[in-house]
Length: 161
Image (cartoon, rainbow, N blue to C red):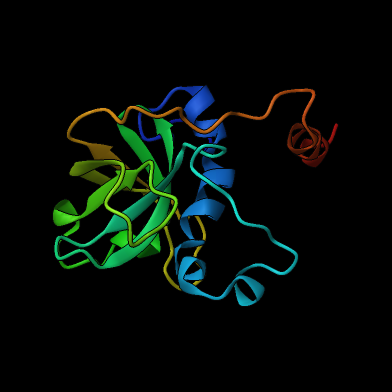
């Protein structure tokens, strides 16, 4: 997904989390579905287990989407979620909140938005955007897959000889 200089100025560790984080980011609508309809065979998760999972809301408190913390001030989300947003800099990013209706957690303002330069709305290829937060989140970033993880093996196999 990210090659060469198309890593939004992020280091390799952060860019490597792009695929997993994009999947998390596009899961926002599923957060309001009933458990049976949201993810087949899924299970409840908490921010204790997944502190990098973030909620993105509009300024008036409406759940907008989800994202993944990939660095203290960087949130990876889907480009289609923010590209046509009427006011992306008015979005709020919230961490530490397992229950959407709760008021717990840290709230941060978005300082800037960068959509992948090759994003194509028609096919949703390169569907990634990075939100830069006004101040760092106090939570752990998304862990990156390593050689011992199955995701790493899939990545290695897809490269071929």
